[in-house]
Amino acid sequence: MNLNLPEFDKKELLSRSANLAQLAGITPFEYTQGKAAGLKALEVETGNALSYVVLQDRCLDIYQMKYKGINVSYISKAGLAHPHYYNPKPSEFSKTFQGGMMYTCGLSNVGSPCVIDGVEYTQHGSISASPASNVSTVSKWIGNRYVMEISGDMYESRLFGENLKLRRTITTELGGKSVKICDTLENQGFEEQGYMILYHCNFGYPFLSEDTVLVLPNDHSVPRDEEAAKGMKTHTVFSKPIDGYKEQVFYHDLATDDNGYATVLVKNEKCGFGVYITYKKDTLDRLIQWKSMKTGDYVLGIEPANCSVSGRAAEQASESGLKR
Image 1 (cartoon, one colour):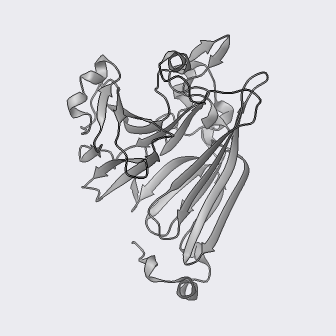
Image 2 (cartoon, helix red, strand yellow):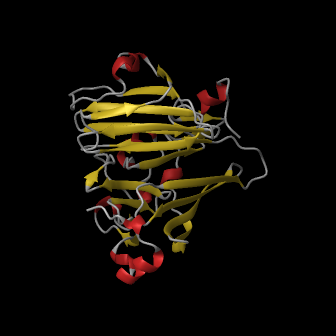
Image 3 (cartoon, helix red, strand yellow):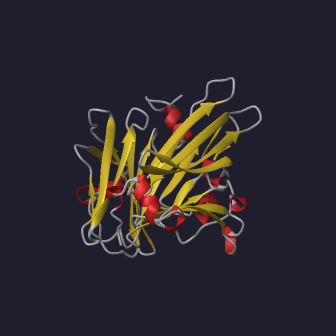
């Protein structure tokens, strides 16, 4: 059931529901079993068919998301793991990659692992395994809008190296159908630091199916490699699971609106809705698409980023170089 909440002002809504927890809110909880045991999280209900889980102990990333009771997000078969299980070895990354609606990659590396001046940079970086500190949840009225926020700080720091702070605020509203993520990256060190960041947004079944279509307005697209080149004509449509399918990765350059925002749409008319991802292109100048129709690994990744997925060494050697 969808609530037609906008027709109520604050006073009338409170007259019908003095405790808004019966409609919406932020509920903290802790996982108790398996590799996720001990991991703190927060469940958000908007009261208008949208719900999602924020992982407090994993970078405030968004794990499972549902709309109208339909799962939107992709959860990998590795499942959710407490950051205690994080292992920087390249061969171990896939054992703790939970997927989820949004998985943050960075801050020192995105994509392929590499070694630079004796420093190992792990696949997709380590920020997603960082628990948030200074976590706060706020639910408040702003006029007739009931706003719910989750905020916290994550750090990527090492002796004689970088000292980066990522401040994240996730905002949604009572009766809302959208989630706003505001990240602020601060260099708290005394040397200039290059950084890489990618928002790994992952769609899964049943929202992802042969009824799903990817809409990329006014884009210029190129494949990452020969395997992706095989799928250039079909990269915006999806099939049933295919045994032995090899993943394909595409780079997209999208046009922006008058305010500098680029927007990509993933829609499924059979499910009856679509999901927009909107981002500021002057900050995130790349859009990467990850497509796997493989049986058991069935996923679409839409990934705004400030870099490629070739790794830090390749990015430093490229014409654009690392963002600072």
